[in-house]
Amino acid sequence: MYGFIEQEKLYSFSIPQYTPSPYEVKEEVEKEGSFAINRVEASEINWAACGNKFNLPQSFNDDGYNVAKCMRPVAAPLLIDHFGESIIDKLFQKYGEILSDCMSKEDTKFVNVTISMTKERMDG
Image (cartoon, rainbow, N blue to C red; front, side, top):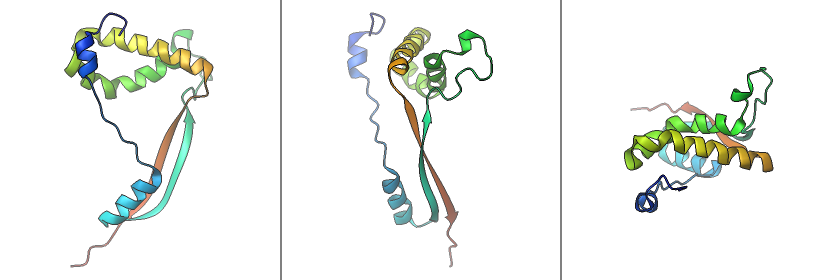
């Protein structure tokens, strides 16, 4: 990627991900039986939720940079383990640039699923 990641390491890196639907989550919780589901809601949140309503300096007002900064604590340990620590700063800088470009062209959103549950009483 852009000359600073070894091609072999890039091609051997994989993070399988499956994002279940709210229905699938509800079905699994009910099947397991320890909780009763009170409510399931899916909501969308703009990636650029804050804008500059806090009058922050311009360096803090780059939405792509801010999203990359939020993703870094989750992804960095996996990336460091596979690629090494030396590329991480440059990688997330580039990621922020890519996100900024994407966010300037699209209405980007996160989808959050919120589930309210009550622990079932276990008689026995």
